[in-house]
Image 1 (spheres, protein in one colour):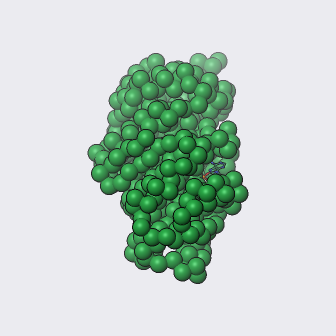
Image 2 (cartoon, helix red, strand yellow):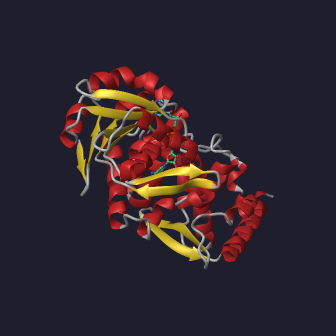
Image 3 (cartoon, helix red, strand yellow):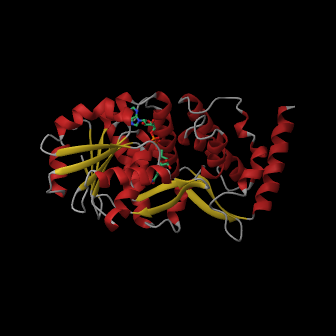
Length: 349
Ligand SMILES: NC(=O)c1ccc[n+]([C@@H]2O[C@H](COP(=O)([O-])OP(=O)(O)OC[C@H]3O[C@@H](n4cnc5c(N)ncnc54)[C@H](O)[C@@H]3O)[C@@H](O)[C@H]2O)c1
């Protein structure tokens, strides 16, 4: 199925990549394609991709991470293989490959055409949608980046068949976040679903597109997508980006945000339990996990990117489908947190 945006098209399919060739031909009339990917993805898919894109001359280029070293290294390989401004760059991989390739596309020769082929659930519903591309620096994630539209996004659910449960769940955490933020019906539907189906994935993509359309440069409303991210990022970092994958970390982060929302009387009281049980049911969080005891995160909170001179832009949820951005003074937030935590401990006695 085709999802149109004002700048490019997204094709969402489950047909063994058979529509890739014609869709690419509609946006690119050259013959040479440079595909940036990771070795494991190459081994799983290069034969099928070669068959699907048999009319093109393909050069595969490998990357590992999306740091500055890999950015430079990948550009060097592309130049060594004589990439030119009129050639097409394609990302074949998850958010890491997509973000890196998109950033390369936006900077090499001051911008060349590129196509995203996202292969993880997270990249299919999130990172390939919305034009954000970036690389990580030693000082932090996504510190250098751009807004750069792809010419096309080709999503085939076939890729998800080889994805590990851990990686799938990470994407599912993001999917649940989108649903609870903006679509009650979808949220309830996900409760009854084992694997997201193509219509549910389409809905999540459309939600993200609608948010991006309202605020393309992340100045206001798009910040609502950061629900669960204030504490989620801390948890992700504490696990050295390996132990708790992004969607898992933000699952804990969403629960913490609901707790704080309860304390400040900003959140529907039933939401915490509802989401908690859903996340347990889906295996995204484990019960009795001390990650919800956010007391110990105080030190890390001050490094949050959403901190302004006045405080922190915190994303609350009033009720399902109604997010709220509220700037809170850090001390105020912390006093409330401490208070709530004490009450929580009292209850356990
Ligand atoms: N640009 C954005 O708007 C945006 C939004 C959210 C996240 N991100 C970025 O996305 C990145 C995370 O992306 P991710 O979760 O896709 O992780 P990832 O790209 O690291 O992929 C996860 C792992 O799955 C493997 N893999 C990919 N596709 C596979 C497949 N089909 N079968 C088997 N294995 C496969 C990868 O090789 C990798 O080892 C982060 O760097 C994050 O900053 C960007």
